[in-house]
Length: 120
Image 1: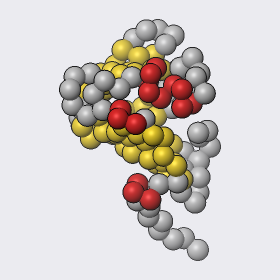
Image 2: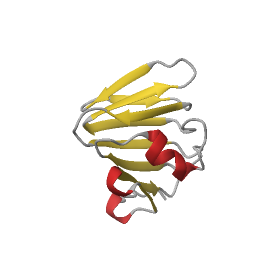
Image 3: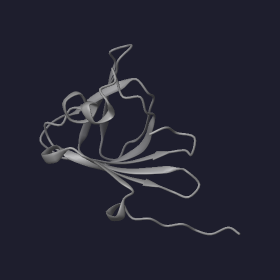
């Protein structure tokens, strides 16, 4: 039987706590798809604040499809060194192999989605 499933980020399955630099609340739906609510405070960098929580890979190993609610995030593809600026109102798809940082003094808030076959 088909049923609609609803979840809330304030009751997340997992939290990546980045202390005063923000955090990521992670929800896993019954079908395996994942939703994430990410908050990155001014001064946040992937290198300093998230990399250690992921076991220190060379770059972020995940693909991110999402929407920027607020702020200005700069994402860099490691292999090409190309930087992309993601701002409030942008819908984006970032392939694996990147890092990033918050630009400016406004908090970055993102909603991210991943399909069931995605690894976290």
